[in-house]
Length: 186
Image (cartoon, rainbow, N blue to C red; front, side):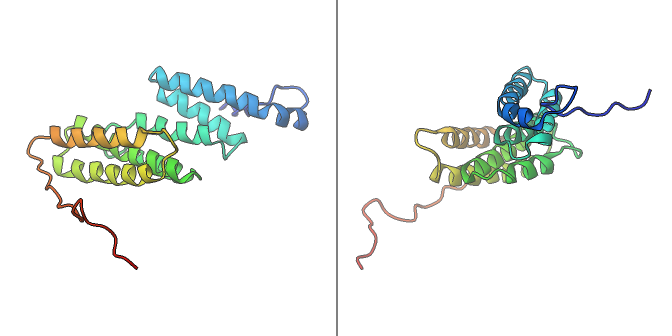
């Protein structure tokens, strides 16, 4: 028996009715998005990745599937040479929403650092990753949607992670302005 061919999500067999498929595409991919999320919560990132790739095969700009695919790849990071972090980064860079692009790229840097920490990589390689994550979270925080504190929460987690690393001293930066300073009058 040869290799099986992949089947497209939304194709029910029999004659392919393109109009019906397009009408049902959104609801089917919505259900598929939920299934991908379920497998991610079950800590089965390979299954999540597979479902997301099926969704993206028929709807290449599905935001939820793109985010979930990047996260599924992040969930597979082990801190080794063969990690697919650049693939996850490429996925996140395709997100059209600037906030999401920054937030999820920051999440990738943070998770990559944590994976390398678990793998026993040298601390000197972890700190730049955490700092890159913090830069992304800081930029995302500036353009975040109302009442979305996720970038702030991730920033705080990075600060705590840095503080927990033995022998890592962060220099305190002097504030650029004193509290009483104001912009020059025009």
